[in-house]
Image (cartoon, rainbow, N blue to C red):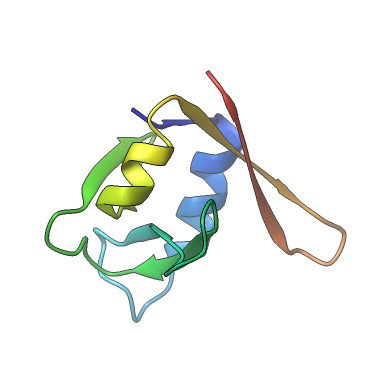
Length: 93
C-alpha cells in the first residue's frame, strides 16, 4: 500500500484546506488514459467508486484502481519550491 511521508501529508492537508472542499477531501491519483506510467493528481472532495483510500496524519489520498496497483510499493513525498508550488515524488519503500 502507498505510504505518505510527513512532507506529503502536510502538503496534501494544505492543498485541500479550502472552504469549498468538504472536511473529508483529499487528493486523487489516477492513471493516465492510454499513457503507460503516467499519473494525474487532483484535489477531490470524495473518493470515486472503487478508489482505494490511504489516510495518514490527517491527509487522504484516493487511488484509482490502476494507480493503486502501480503505487502499491511506493512512498509519496512532497516538496515546495520558492514560488510555493508543490511537487510530488515517488520512491520505493
